[in-house]
Image: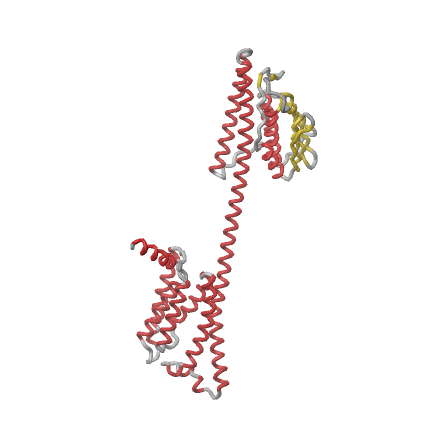
Length: 424
């Protein structure tokens, strides 16, 4: 029994709540003061009507019209229904036009501005039907209504044509007035929709910007972590192989690991700060930081050979400098992880309208087993890890495309070559 009662009352409660719009507390207070002022103003004018005025019918009409006025913003459909009830009470009790009828214009405005699509067109139909009711009420029943017998042209018209023309004139004036209020509400409805559309567009742009920023930070995080871990792994392997034969080389490898880990930790902290606070933009790497990048790679035991020809003629754009740094960082990391331990050749060419970069290293063939190798410079042994798939190539390609450049990576003979051309 209780379950059935609850299931029956819930849809009714939901339907009742659906009649009301969400309005702010300030709007509730404003509508309350407006309704109170309207009620006081219309009530003061009641004694000024003719002697045949019905106080009971007038008070009921005034109460209903004031209620419709106060509900017009928060419940347009309910407000329109109450206004029609008030109009029927007024016509049924034979009341003359009164100041409370001004509320009808406010209700039609609110119905067109705030109502649903169905209520919107019901308001239009109500304006047309209301104009017809006004014309018929004044001309057909007007002579019998207290104080408005002077507008009755049906009985006093000199000809039927004059009566019809007078009826059409009153109908046109009433229709124009009511539709004017409805049209103003429709225009205000367009303004509200435009504001909502603009707000949604700004929100979508903000979300897209945030998503782009998260993607950039994710790429930076990948570059920092992948590069640093590759150096740490290479040095750890070298220290393990050289611990017994050359303790000094092992000590040097451990120092490199410590320095690389501290640098990576600083970069990761900066990126995490950017995730927490969008305004906390840290300094981005530039081409001036390339020497430090090369030093990290060489410290890992890689024979890195860098050529810059020609040199940059001036100060390239910051976005291009960042792209060059990140692409070289990822490319040298991949060469260190997947190469055969031989030389890695880096070439930079700063041309008048673009910068061309390439990173070339020997590939490890599929039938070659990774064996410990040593470099002539550091004499630190390290084993090339097995090649694995990752997001490095995707990240490098995205960085090149973000600045309008081209990126290509693939095997060339026995080498693996990364090439990029970025506009300056």
